[in-house]
Length: 211
Image (cartoon, rainbow, N blue to C red; front, side):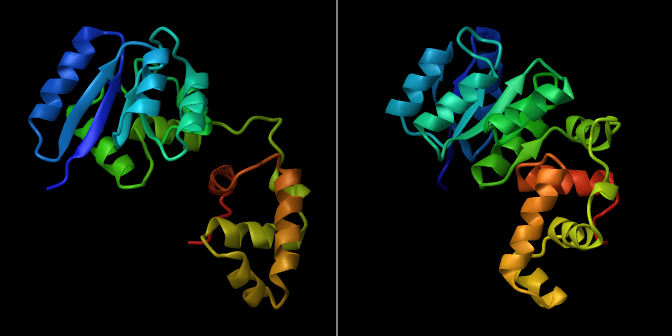
């Protein structure tokens, strides 16, 4: 069995020791190295081979901005943030910076292992409580409402949020994929959204996802 290779970046020895114990009890994970600060994590990314980086944001030289620097050094890097910070917005900032997973340090070990395996397999993972908080947080008054969209733009938004490709939507609406792309660009600009993940969450909050 090929093991998932982990690198731990955390300045607390107790945390690193605890993670070693958790991983030692598994058959598919292995810790290949550790670092105690941001520069150490950057050096590891550049010089060592591993599959998933477990990253503490509050260590010296850390912070959300470190995630972007790590991804810049190695675009394919898979990062799981392991943090004491349980604020949903911090998790959102980490994901936007390039993290593939976010778990708090008071989470169960089984949840952390699920996050590691999911991220190593190419998926994304956020601790359920944080994901729920982000998904169902109150929509601020400054967020553009669906009524700023035209009927066709709302229709296309529903299809996009439901997983349809531009080509599929074009076939359903009897128009060209280029026309759909133009509508998509316009509706995203009106909603102040710049990526598909945020577009999906917007549609979910406003009950615009087809069931």
